[in-house]
Amino acid sequence: MAIEKIRGVVINIVKYSDRHNVITLFTRSRGRMAFLSPVGSGKLGRMRSARLLPLSVVDADVNMRQSRELQLLGAVTPAEIWHDLYFNPVKSSIALFLSEFLNRYLRDASPDPAAWDFILASIRVLDEKKQGLANFHIWFLVRFLDIAGIAPDLHDYERGDCFDMRAGIPVVAASFHKDILSPSETHLLVVLSRITLRNMRLYRFNGTERRQLLDRILRYYAIHFPGLSGLKSPDILSEVFS
Image 1 (spheres, rainbow, N blue to C red):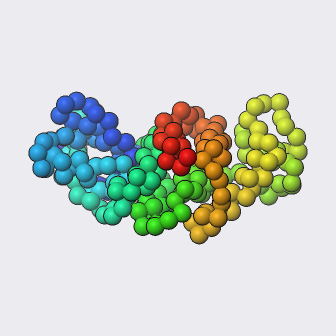
Image 2 (cartoon, rainbow, N blue to C red):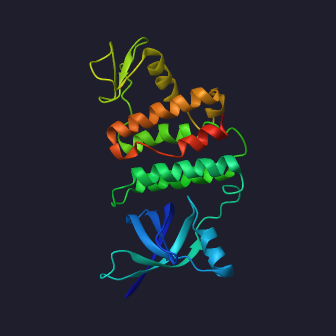
Image 3 (cartoon, rainbow, N blue to C red):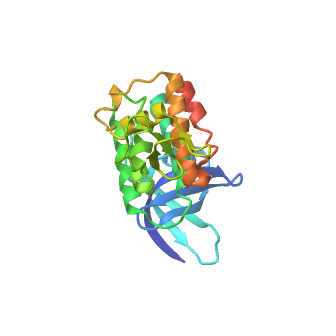
């Protein structure tokens, strides 16, 4: 048995049995990893559960055994302390959405240092940010397009163009398939491509518009990464930002 020290962000928690959960971590050095984690009881059990929440960043001891399909997650300590993420209902809802999105996107076990760095920096911002959170998840998804390798090529865009979501480029007229954004939606995509942490509060949407926008972005992701269809947490965000 070899004990390895790892650092990871929690992207999924699933009940495995009365005694164990399966905790999925995304790590910078080893990519996606799933572990059996004892549930425990009493004060120590509650402390462990509090350290393993969606988007928690932890240092952990892992008992590596070749004979195990799932490695056992040993002692866990916080690598980052989130001060507001789990106490602010808006932030906690965004955290649930991001963890579900990342769990689906990061299905490949291989490391992705660029994704890790961006995810960690984004969680830090989310925890620290005091206001203007309504568009945070939109900003995250738009900026993550570059990391995912599917950022739209908008260099040849002209007002009135449609956007072919399969090809990732603007087109003069609607194609024969259904994955096309209208000219007005395409113009909004161009505007959104300029969204930053500083200016995202200036993007004004009502609840219905924000949900429709989120649905379009997620649809674009799902076209290129089929596992990203059917997320549950956008319904929660719709209630929070209605």
